[in-house]
Length: 318
Image (cartoon, rainbow, N blue to C red; front, side, top):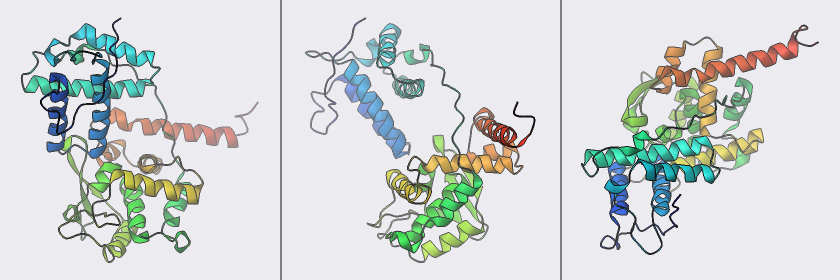
């Protein structure tokens, strides 16, 4: 199997003349993602994956092949190299998704005759039951945010952040992407822009409303910044900034720095289901395109029920 040596990522403003056709195509694709308002998280991941893709196909003393000359056998060699690196199936699936999306872009602009990446088989992802904090653990965490003892610079914002993550089940990219005009304060609805630029309406409750009112009374943003959540400079809070905020409070209150914004989204869905919410309704609230994605939370509930049974029922033990 041919293995290409790594090359430095060439995508800089001053290298357009010497840039290879493949590198220039990747740059065009990433620019298109930006114009399509893809989340910063998606763009960074795809940029990293395609950088590695370019490195694989970059020999030491020659240009990488043009996109149109990359066929299915070459892509299978690249895919095999990912398995040789002992990457887990989730990482391989993401990298393959990035390459498929890249070739689909090239197909739309007629740079390639077909999307050969679609010929590759997607590795099966292991069925993992998401780790979800209990309702008591989650409420202890959320209620503990903003306490004076932490001496945080923006406690009102932090409380609003947690109330929206857990109270609305938002993805972190959706949360930091919210603008002031996306909130209907009278009816308590939020217009959320999710994956694939799909919009949905999500309600929020009294606690979130109270935290928002308190935060907005102290919100200090730069002129013209419409972002709901702002950082210490008055600009839009980034998804990395939101993750660091969650990590800080999770470590300080729960003693578990592994908790992240998606843990609160999992908790939102699982606790709704446990209290009798309809699975289809939860699908709409989460913005899942497929019901099967939402159904993983039923497995979480069953796992919790089995744990209760094993602990409490006299016939569960021998």
